[in-house]
Image (cartoon, rainbow, N blue to C red):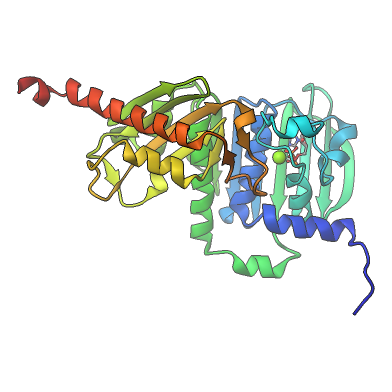
Amino acid sequence: MAKIHELSENLTNQIAAGEVIERPASVVKELVENAIDAQASRIRVEVQHSGLKQISVQDNGSGIAPDQVDLAFMRHATSKIQDEHDLFNIATLGFRGEALASIAAVAHVEILTSTDGQTATRAAFAGGVKKFQEDAGSAKGTKITVGDIFYNTPARLKYLKSPKTELLKIVDIVNRIALGHPEISLTLASDGKVLLRTPGNGNLKQDVANIYGRKVAEKMLTVENEDPDFTLYGLVSEANLTRSSRNFISILLNGRYIKNYQLSSALLDGYGNKLGGKYPIAVLAIEADPLLVDVNVHPTKEEVRLSKEKELSRLITSAVTEALMDEDEASPLFQLT
Ligand code: ADP
Ligand code: MG
């Protein structure tokens, strides 16, 4: 056997990229989450050829100072947590300091960023190595452009689905992030064509109308509930408006889109037997004390560990049941009988 030796930083970044960056949609997710963490109120995502050729994400957030750009692209370097206490009290979407390093390890990346709207810096990275950095002009915020994803990892490239499927995955993640952040104006354009533009005025119903159509939005009922640990707010479809998969249920925990079978089942339970084996359209935003949420379970953070999951499930089920009851009372048919 060969001697044991430490892997180069470049190689460890590529290995980490295998976990965090699975496909173009993962790049979009990481960059948009960074923009949200930077307090952006406007985010524009543009993709060329389903993101396989290019992905760019532009925000009007805090920007990165020129002398911090190298750190931003270094693995395990983050501005979001300091110590282990913070690790159990995560208030941001990112905290692992892995995304930019991972993306730069498997693609060509250019960044243009300004913290004040006057001075800006532009830098480029490829295969984990910085190519140049220079002064530039830019509005306040950050634009990151990612080209030739997986150009140096052919196995990854091969594993990707068709461009059509990859684009659908991008649309899906942007839609869900938009639903979780109606206060942010999000635009998604593909090959120059705008696929989604949300106004960012905080109106969830309007976002639902933009994403699922006006007719759907009109048939959505408001769900609300709270207890000392959790606050729920969302929209769920009337029982007669269903889909044949769970894909139209979005659960957002502290602004993070998560996959959680227990919680989506709790939502379904709220309908009792009214769904006839089908699934509703739903957006459910849950606010919880960060201390109750362990996000550090999975590199992409889509799965989280929740304390008091049973209590939260009950809260969700009863909120949905109540929303459906209110609806029955409001319906004219009911009033006639
Ligand atoms: P993480 O989000 O886990 O901190 P990233 O690799 O995604 O790790 O980003 C590294 C750092 O770069 C962030 O902690 C943040 O300080 C900075 N950064 C990344 N994207 C942006 C952005 N769009 N605007 C401002 N700062 C950013
Ligand atoms: Mg990040």
